[in-house]
Image (cartoon, rainbow, N blue to C red; front, top):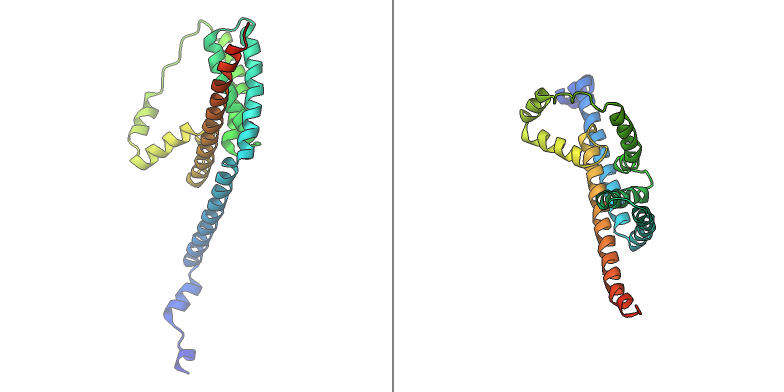
Length: 205
């Protein structure tokens, strides 16, 4: 009886305060985003750890490396060929992600940006080199340690310089899992090539 006549102050304040409702909404949205990101991370880890994805990547990498070798045999420099092999391995890795992540789309767009940059550099030959922005560097050095490390992580993951922290962590998790798969595939290819090399030497006339 008394409880029905005098409702609790806490309930009245909570129901009447829009700020408390916004806080509860933000907390629930954050919890939902965290749960969704954890599910995405688990799915990406499972995808990059499957043998099928590794085999598909290895076969595509071998085909791409054959084309690079043909171009290098036509008179290309060794340094440019080595750089192209590295870029080819990264592009095949990004293609294996099928453009579902920001880092894969950034890697696939690197060649277009590189060609445009090369064309622009040819136009600016002989021009004065612009000075570096030391003010931005000083501003970065004054950042807290966590923000500074997040900025470094954003530079390491392709296409993630200007993303939110949850998105950056999701992209970094997927990118690291993809790189681990790349290392496993390259190790398998190296073992196959090392095993096939003595046989080819024995079969030579």
